[in-house]
Image 1 (tube, rainbow, N blue to C red):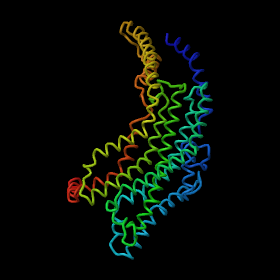
Image 2 (image 1 turned 90 degrees about the vertical axis):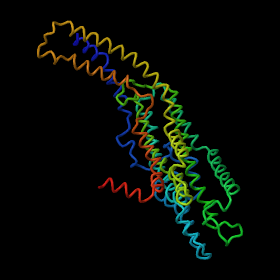
Image 3 (image 1 turned 135 degrees about the vertical axis):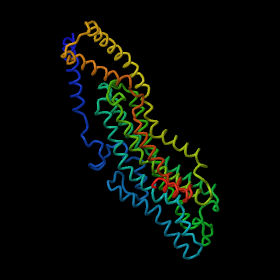
Image 4 (image 1 turned 30 degrees about the vertical axis):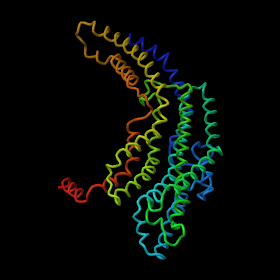
Length: 426
């Protein structure tokens, strides 16, 4: 009986699987497809270039798709942070008032312009390139049904046109200008750090304060808006892909029907989440150090920030929930029926015997066949309904929450920290 089943399986299934594997393997990306080291980006990369890159060029941060991203990150610091330090130092020399010391102790401006802005620029060459590799792998992995591959190509082309839309560039400019206008109109001068004011100007705003409002903040907003737009493109791409016919395999060893590779996007987005966390943590640090606040006072705000991070970066993967749920339901029925039939045959074969077994009986191939089948069935029954793993979420959460660790330590008295350290060490 076992030999008969083995022959049927080898004749009917193995050639089909081999043929399919050959088709997928022929279109599979190289080993270094997800590696950040490689040739310079091209216009074929969906998440590189476009409206946000044109805005960066207009701001003097380099042409679109420029490979020297370190130079662009340095320029962000030179334009966004260095003039603030220079103008504040000059203002302090001309009108002594310790404004330079207030600038040095302003953790918010350092977190925004010295850390977050250049880091988000650096993330463009790391995360954007890997997101592009993941989007290309959607086509090359065989996940999309062969009949819908032309539709997938149309989707990608549509995303390219959307990425390059002039209206996006215009919308970002309008948003930045509206923010600057609202900031100047709604924020009184006495609510800003002391280095923003000066007795040498008629308006009361220092040169550093004007530079911060008209240059530093727009640079940061432009970079952040660029990443918001990339996230929107990624979500739109995944949504449209989820509407295609997908070759989801319930028993796939990755536990997500063959889509688990999409969870790698969370690891790339962790860099962006860290940059956004730095923006928020810098403002909270000022409140903790100079206004007597505690990190606990911001617990609801931090919870909201964590929810926002998960929504932005993990939310797009939820579009595959219906397809994965359907594949799992069908897989449980089919694989469950197969396991039941095979198990019944196994029990009839062995439990009908007299109970005396020879030493060679345990070497019967039916034992290994049953084990192999049940492991496949277990994959189908344990299939996840989202194409990600807890490790992906952990990396994302670590990147988002790590900037708040120094702020939390600021809220704890130094003697308490030393006492706890002494107890751990001794």
